[in-house]
Length: 115
Image (tube, rainbow, N blue to C red; front, top):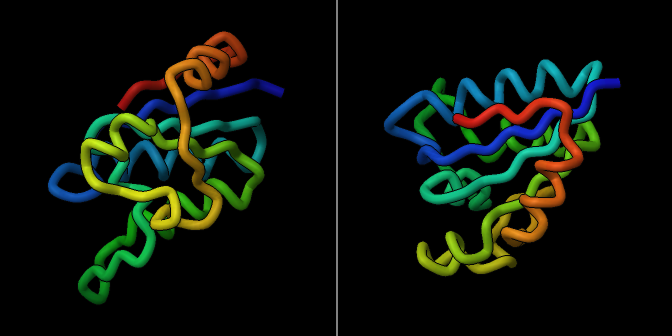
């Protein structure tokens, strides 16, 4: 089984990079191992309680779908701090991460996809 690491950098809304990354991660997680690491503005993707207009995608829900497929989901702790996101505000399935964890996940992965 292939091991895939997704590293997301873009914000949850305003561009479609994180949206498309999570679409692919969710699809791959059906057949392969997937881990997702959120950095920079992508840290906001894991903020729980997002309310979006009806008919618009909810990036936290999409992240939760990936997490429920037993994928690891981590958020850069430094990036969380810079954006005022507390660990208790993270959506279910996401946890505070570190650069050391990202390093470990990078060596674990067969493929690293950066969005």
